[in-house]
Image (cartoon, rainbow, N blue to C red; front, side, top):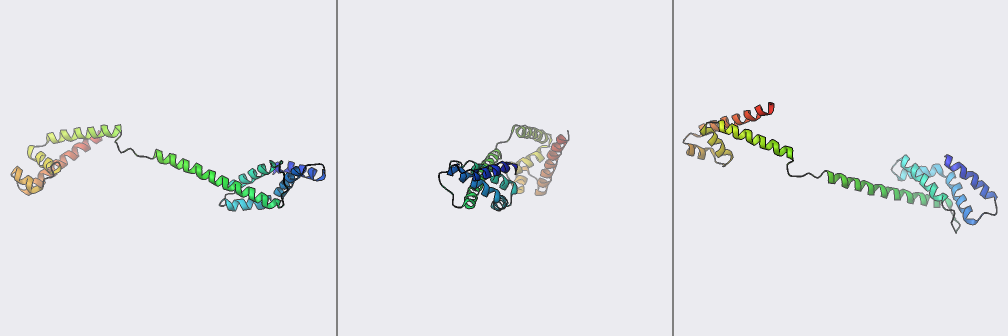
Length: 195
């Protein structure tokens, strides 16, 4: 409110000084009307800015600065209050638009940083290679028939019956071979993970 006090004194001085130009008296009338309507203007802008009184206070301050710079008006303002509200409303709209542009820009930057590269990173590649080496070692440790049963099932996609025919064993034996091989591989991965 201190900012407005010095203009009150100049407004009253201008009102008593008859030799001032018409433009200067228009500016002083606007400042005086602004001061009279300050609280109502603040409430109006708070409503317009969705209840944000801090943003409204900033727009009121911007309005005052804009009005204080109107000393070069060539015409008389018929309704100073309406003029002030129009200036304040326009400044509020400008502020909302500016904030939306900035928000959209920030969201775009965030969206760009959130883009996920589908390629695995160096760490993932190293871990995958280590797991493949562990699996190769575990498979090499298995007896021949369990290893073949697992590879035919998982890699070649053969059914238990096809594997049984190929290995010359029963379907239940194929299931046991695959279960034994899977357990051995899982145990090898878990043992490596504990190291």
